[in-house]
Amino acid sequence: MNTDVQLITLGWPDTGLLQRTENVFHAIEARCSRFRPSSELSSFNARVAADATVSAELFRLLELCRHYHHLSGGAFDPAVLPSLEAAGYDRSFELGTRPPHAEEAPRRSGQSIASVQLNAARSTASAPDGLRIDLGGIAKGYAVDQAVRELAATGDFLVDAGGDMYASGGGPDRSGWLVGVADPYRDDVDLTVLRIRDQALATSSVARRRWQRAGRWLHHLIDPRTGAPAESDAVSVSVIASSAVDADVFAKVGLLLGCADGGRFLEEQRVEGLFVRSDGTWTTTAHWPGG
Image (tube, rainbow, N blue to C red):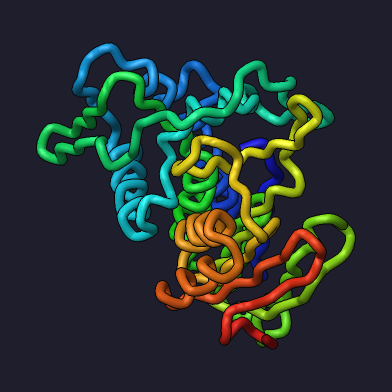
């Protein structure tokens, strides 16, 4: 996931719980990373047979991908890995490094997660030749939600995986966990500070994971409608939702659609969002806290 993970509670009942919760992230990373040749996702992407037997966890993630694809009218589609690699994102962003300049023009893959067929009775997934998936943020949101289940008995806790977070209970002062929404251009500045309780918060931004090709800045968020890095009037979208998966996916969809269409989409899903424009100004949905 190439990020830091923080697990905070008001009191750990035992060190075993901490270890089990930490292992949630290691296990999902090992299964779902496209950058690990040994991962189950890499094996699925390299499949030679039409039907591939998959684990219950990967099956569930593929189900979720199909669900969000339908819900978003196709704006969310993780079957964009060929386009992402063509744009230049063919390796992990390690500390202090960036992907090299792209050697190909970004292109539409012509594939869709909707064409993945799932058979629960046989635990198989089938997909057309050439369809390759990047689970990216949805797996991180999923990992946060699995960690939340592991920690449920503690009551008051916060899980933060690189900005995908869930806050449970009232926090140290019992009035909710205090969290900041960072300025996408200045890491040390918060646009706003919120109190959230039994809610998730996630942010999607194109201001950080960027690289250049032919003098043009490209980024990691591919628009499946074009096969190229998304171009909208939003550079960052933060979403408050009931789960980290919802918050993560809806933030990406909001960013792809832009401030107006994205705002309408979020309100249809009954979640709240904050949109930062390229000029640094920002707008929110109607019931964003403090908005």
